[in-house]
Image (cartoon, rainbow, N blue to C red; front, side):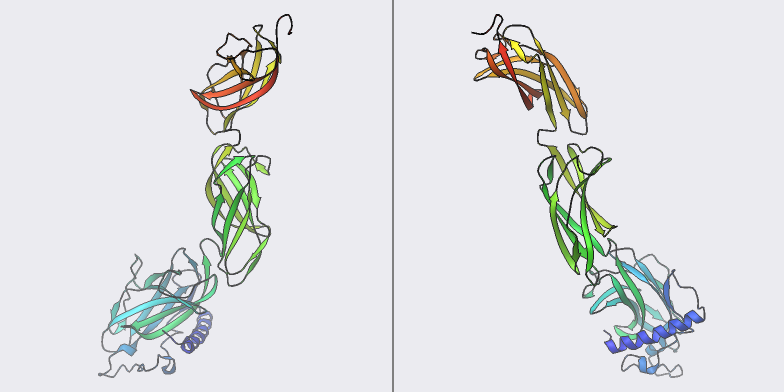
Length: 427
């Protein structure tokens, strides 16, 4: 590994060469927006800039190994890379000014940032005879003389690469011994954003529509080198075209690393947004904002239900509200609410009259299918001790009970108070 003093010397040398190249309008880089070093400006390192102990090239020497005669003639490096993002590409050329073929050569790229140093990519090993070298591509389908480079903390090296300025170091080595180094400035970003919601969780994962709140936990990752302020997390529930606010964090500042935010999260159609949330699968969306500027978001799958059931009798009415025992029928009107996303079939409303321990059937709807939304069912409703059930109905207060059934399965029920009387009056 290079000593820091050497890196500084090479950085200063390359900066001067870059300035000269810009003035001379040197050749086009391998990819747009790249730093470039070419033969006219880079040439060979001066003796004092070579790694310690390396012999200066003497093309006329028959006894020299020739290793010191191999050097870069041009290097083109990307100006930016994204952690866990797309690859960039380095283009290099080199030549051998000696008389002998040199084998065991390799070009490697490293990313340096503060105390962090991570491998970024390399060419395949190669040999170079006298004259220009043919540098084979790395283990990717790219042209000779080029190889892909990545920014990632999973690669060999040490330290953690963060968003911000960095240096790309491109090394020419011979059997592990450094021959030449060039450096270029580099800006590192992150594929998910340098400040981003890295993960989210909701407890419980099923929320009741218009019911109790859950707790959202959002982990925000700051891959910058400094704290970021004026952040907030806004929660939403998204279901098809419906989108409703569900809660938000307080404004916060996130230092370098991770910040955990917790806040209440609720499913309610009265909150700001559009559309109607229904029972079923939905998405909890967490948007990270900085001031009024959206940054990044993360989503998780959740489920919505209803405290009264997703298919339920929402209301009921009876006309008249006073029924004669064994007398004329009244009319029951029951509104069934289907808060699911699809029609529900094989439904039926069964009516009962309950009075103390007495319970007698009073009428029922025909079987029906209820699409999303409301369905109104009307049917005859009668108080009669000859109807199926138990006990004896008598004059006085009673309860009309309406049970929603799906096939033979009870779903939900609703009750309203009624009054029972007798023809000719009650005693």
